[in-house]
Length: 234
Image 1: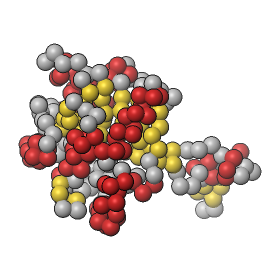
Image 2: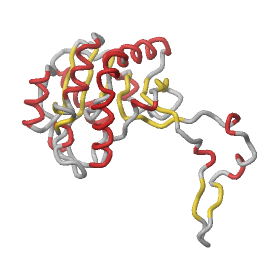
Image 3: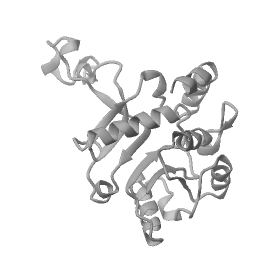
């Protein structure tokens, strides 16, 4: 079975009730749920949560919450891998094998169905264990500066100072939107930040890191201006 898992716990320190906070007129969780359902890629779209209110919102949006997440997997220190393995194991206990899995994060209002379909096809083509959404650094980190003890600055990597920007390696960061994965690779703890991963490069206008109230306000303002064209164009 092919499933999409949206991990959405109740706790959030910097933005209260972040995973179901209203974003441009609907709970933000609705955007990834609707995109996953509309993509046609998945047999099930499952929200993993320990929170009753989040579960109700998820079901209202069309996702399924077949079981609750244990409280011990809903604290500040639990990684996504443990949450995904819990979902896989629960399905396996019911005799359902998970062949392909996508982890789709809950605060991703810029994800679209066409984007998920394109990433899924890229993953199949790559034959990699993972396919992760990334975005290119706007400025090369190889030119990064560090603070020196005397208050001045110096190069983090002085060996790259003499190279032209176009001669530096392309560099990416995890966009925090989604990743596809082979459940076996996940169980075997193969790192996602490794050569086991195929990058799916997002355009910069879709890569929004929403961690603070300021981030939220900027992302919501951008969505209100560009949301219709984003959904039409994927």
